[in-house]
Amino acid sequence: MTRSPTPLPRPSGLRFALRVGASRIDGQGAFALGPIPARRKVGELTGERISVRTARRRARDTARVAIVELDERVALDASRGGNALRYVNHSCTPNCYLRIAAGHVEFYALRPIARGEELTARYGATHHDGRLRCRCGSAGCDGWL
Ligand SMILES: [Zn+2]
Image (spheres, rainbow, N blue to C red):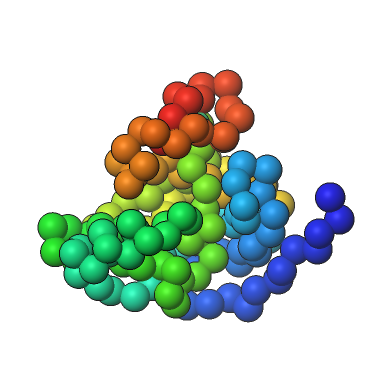
């Protein structure tokens, strides 16, 4: 694989510089450009704020969804105006966790993350309803999303 990674400027919402590049897990991934200490906030997912109803309609029409429901009414569609955190792939043994608080989707490091490491998080319930085979490749893989 000699695909060159796409360096991104540091967009708003990020506290650590990330780059987007080809992932071994799925499609593209978000990679740390420098070390990230454990428990530090990596950043906040950006995107278009839409209604949950609109979000579910968009999710039906899209294979690769980047939508997070913030509460019963509001969702964030990171495929529009999303920063590099939208490329964080699911892993069953992740190095980050995401927290939805007060209408914000925040990513934190679970453990020290090395320069060049791909960022991963355990997704909650997805629109796949456990029907998509997980390809995280970790020893503790649950098998399905
Ligand atoms: Zn897995």
